[in-house]
Length: 464
Image (tube, rainbow, N blue to C red; front, top):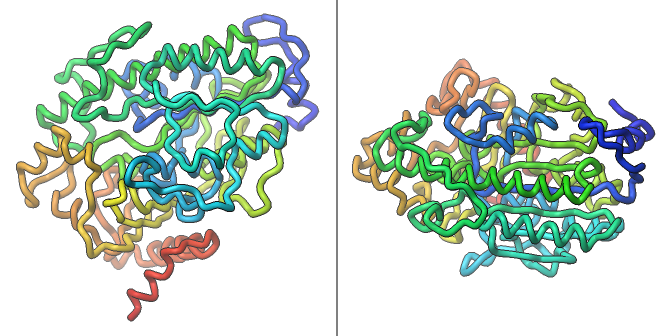
């Protein structure tokens, strides 16, 4: 592992292309956090043979590809709040969506990542999707919301922000709107200046095992892949802006997604399709390239990592993740084999709190209001995929899971994800797995106590 002196020297070293860089001081080390909207592991770098993502694949080849990156919650606003605070959503107050009637927002005491970086001398900007509230808690120097599907305009806005920073270090939160649904489609019919239209054949897409193989699902998957390709082109445009600005080789670029693909069994669910996501980290020049890292990291670790890189002071309270910056040169670091989940709301009508734990082999989920049917996001309910599922009734199948089991869940779920990656065989009642169940239950309860989960009061209700 590089020490700080070696790290500074590495930043001043020539780039791999042979272009000689000026000496870089820590005062101009910058960060770009790139967030996709509803993208699962559907890139070439993660083994998807249908996806066309050459720019993300190049980013992985130039950096570190984490094989076990996890969102802590499978909902847009709540997940983004974790990224920007280093606190789980049950601790930061952003329990669900920020916009419209949903109206969730951060608790007043929370100190956000951009504010902490401003204190360290960084210029801060957001381009694209914000989706966390209140805006005043962030103190952005530039807040350019919207246009999050117009990837060429996003890149031009980023260029202006970076030029406006002069020689100052900056933190840029760059958040796409793709491949999120847009009503019943994926916005592929909208004009997209500067974007090559990458159309996919529904007959040649790969239908994941957790989805039904129907014409409706295939049509929507083709649309999803097209939106993901547009996102990839946007990543390429952003990287070109960084190259042309001369800031690429002293900038930490982190790419991830807020939650899984916008399909049943994925988004709003803590099954792996909703929470196990891409995480690609491109460090500044001088670091090894093309690394694969098997550490289990969660989005609660993102803010601590950025603060560590920027040598910025954290808030007065402890953050609930830890920096993975020291891991970037390691393939299998010790002590990174456990992540925690905390999902509470999506839309305001979707109260379904779940807490859980994931190890390399097992996943444990505790459904705190298991007496209620699992609620649906409005866009997923209206989708062709769910329409096809609804036509079967509760006795039908959604992939390899019964519709009834999707809607009505057990108080506890335990899966051997190594043997059962589809997470369809609940082992919570199996005598052979009671020791594992008890340990992960204990870990989850300790996590909830340690992070001040307000939903702990549910336990006292259940015991009466």
